[in-house]
Image 1 (spheres, rainbow, N blue to C red):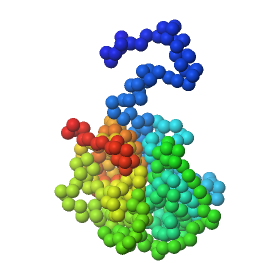
Image 2: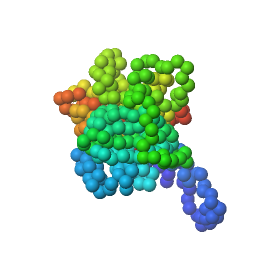
Image 3: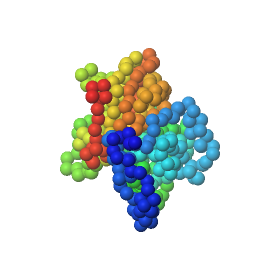
Image 4: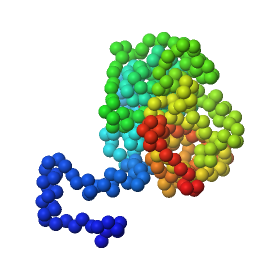
Length: 354
Ligand code: GTQ
C-alpha cells in the first residue's frame, strides 16, 4: 500500500523487461523519480555542520611545516561538507570555505580565476593582498574582495603568520562549467594604485565623475574591521533584525547591492543573553564566530560556537541565534543570496510567524 495515497507501481516481469530496454537506451522513467526531483521544498545535500577552531587550528598551522609555499602556492585546508562528494570542494552545494596560512616572507603568486572570492582575516597583522593592482595591508577582521577574473597575489611582510578564511563560489562555478584559470607571468603583479585607494575613494558615499566601472562587484578592496564594528555599535534599535540582531551587509557602494555577483557578506552583533527568532531562507550560508560566544541552532543541531568556529546553514534549514556569553556575540557570514535572487529563487520566512 502506498502511504501517499498514490497507486503503487507493482513490479512485474513485463515491466522489468521494459525498464531494462529503457535503461539500455540511456533513458529513465520520470515517474519513478519525480518526487525526488521535485520535492515540495529545497532538499539540499549539504548537512548542518560545524568546524571547531580549537580542533582545526593546530592542523592549519602545521600545514606550514608539511608543505612549502613553493609546493602549495595556496596553502589552504578546505572545509568539506560531510553530505557532499569531496571532489566538489564544497561546504554547501554552491559555497566553498577554506582556511589559508601564509608565513612571513612567503609569496602566494599571482593568478586569476572566474570564481569570486572574499577573505575574512582571522589571525595576524601585516600580510598583504594585491587585487587588480591595488595592494592592501590586512588586519584581523578585515574583509577583502577578489572579484571574478581579477589578478591577485598575497604576501606576508610582517613577522608572524597570517591566517584567513577564504570564501569562494567554486562549487557553483564548476556546476555551471564556468571555470577559467590563469597564472600571472611573474610572482607578483605590479602595484598600480596607492594602498587602500578604493576604500578611501568609494567608502564614503562618493564616486569619481565619469567612471564606467563594472557594477557587478564592489570597487572596494578592503572593508576594515574597526569602522564596520563601529557602524554595528551605532545601528539604531529600529534597524535591528528579529532573527539576526544588529546586522550590516558589506555592500557595493555603486549599487547598494551585494559585494560580489554570486555571494553577499555580513557582520552581525547579538546582545549578550539574547535569543533571536528562528528564520530560514532558500540561500545557503556559512557563519564564522568572531567575538564572544553563542549557539547557532540549525535544523535542531545546537552548535555552541566560539571565535573562528565555522558553521554551515544549508538552504532552507531553520536556524536561530543565541548569544551565550556576557559579551556581545559577533559573527561574520556569507551566503549565495545574490545568485538565488538573480534566478528568482530567493525566499525566506520566519517559521514562528508562518
Ligand atoms: O587565495 O587565490 O582557498 O585561488 C582557493 C582558491 C584560495 C586564493 C582558495 C584560491 C585561493
